[in-house]
Image (tube, rainbow, N blue to C red; front, side, top):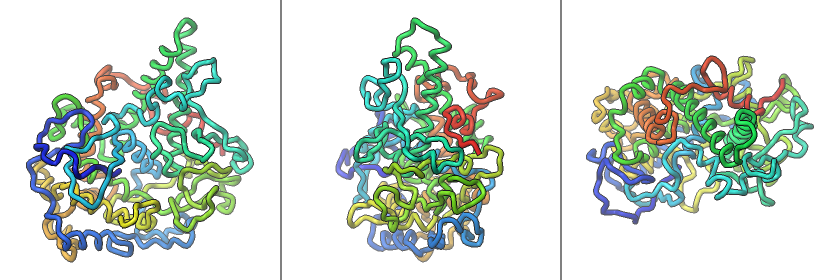
Length: 496
């Protein structure tokens, strides 16, 4: 995500109290990371440059061998604790929390002046839009004459290339292949687009169940409202009990749930802290692998019959069906078989990359950036820590009264004029690498992420934490619910 316009509210005083919908700060009195100088900008650009120290230097000649030959991915080690799908779950969450289309990397920006165009809550407004009344194009008017279910469309010819011969479904699109969904960013790549499609299918399943449970005599509006509540609460459960537990550890999650936040405070409604949006929550960029198996095609054993692709590839020139995993397209093979991304117990899942200060090479050549702006994701993140005036990692750790990384752990920053002042994003990645072996976030990054996400859910008056904190899921089993359960309920799992 990118945030901010430099000229809005430059004189807004720093405060821990914010209006709903704004970005703000966890530590408003801390000095900024560093003064904005040409020397520092050049150092950050060099640190984050292609072929620089943060580049994994992947061999991008073939997407298949990066997956099947461990020697090709020595700088992208497996994370045994988290599977590949949680990177894209995390991207989906980001889009549900924040949206600001007014970014600039060129000027310093005041986060308190920036409007978040999305309500900062985990309430699936990125899926539901403004509901059937305000966003009727998202809903299917052909079922029972109402608009309670989401519109889904077939992918023509997908049955011929799928392992089980079933026709796959896509999010709805207009004649130019623009996705008709609540947040267009959820069509940035095929994986998050198909995850969005799964949420649509899960809602439709819940609608059918709610209709059967309530029986006749209830309006479409009543049925929709109850189904929406059920879907939102299951989603919030997933965020806390699966995504957060895997990302920061169950002990920290339990502590924040039981004892509340130590640092994330607000007066009326939650806000999005810049230390979260610009730094800590961008840990997911380190988890992205250069390539993935999108689906099994017609064979679970023959790679030649499967769809392997780079997450994106500027050289993939076919405008209708490019050989990468970019979104915005519909073609027979452009669907996801989820056994690669989440653990169905069949031995086919791919693990995530560890959290560290190395990013996959594909992320150093981003497509679609404005002229003159960096195309390296690492450089963009590092510069944003400067332009958004984020405190250094060391200062944040001290303010949180948590152990500070030893200078030796950050020796490699010296050539870039960053002695004793690591950009918070880089610090969070290195902290995970040093303190957990890259399997989850460390103390600083983990607490920021846990406090903000749980705080956003608790700050939502309609969330299960506020309405019914002892609630347990009705889908899934044994009073639990996982992403695998969601995908099964949404009927998007291939029969192998």
